[in-house]
Image 1 (tube, rainbow, N blue to C red):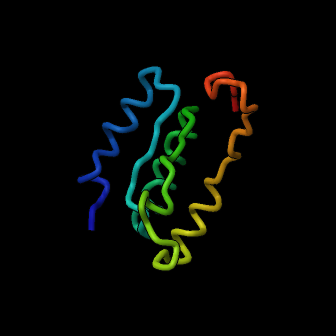
Image 2 (image 1 turned 45 degrees about the horizontal axis):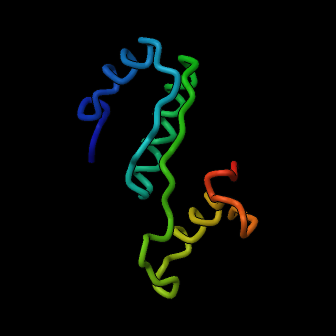
Amino acid sequence: GVGPEELGLDRFSERLRRGVREVILATNPTVEGEATAHYLAAQAAQIGVHASRIAHGVPMGGELTYVDSGTLSHAFSGRHRVAQTDPGSHPADESF
């Protein structure tokens, strides 16, 4: 496995203390990746830095038949509304 030394956690904390407002976490969607993201988010929170994660779920072109329940669960939790546009309006006029 990958330990704290390999991740460079001391450098991570140093960087967060240099005026960073947000850290975007992109870890593998595995138990280890989830644990690492949770740990890093907690470290960021202690310093007052907002932590967010990239979205993950059903891949583009993926077949729902082959998607496991964990991936589907992440996809549902990251869902967002579909913009309803007036046929005469330009999509750029819509805001979320």
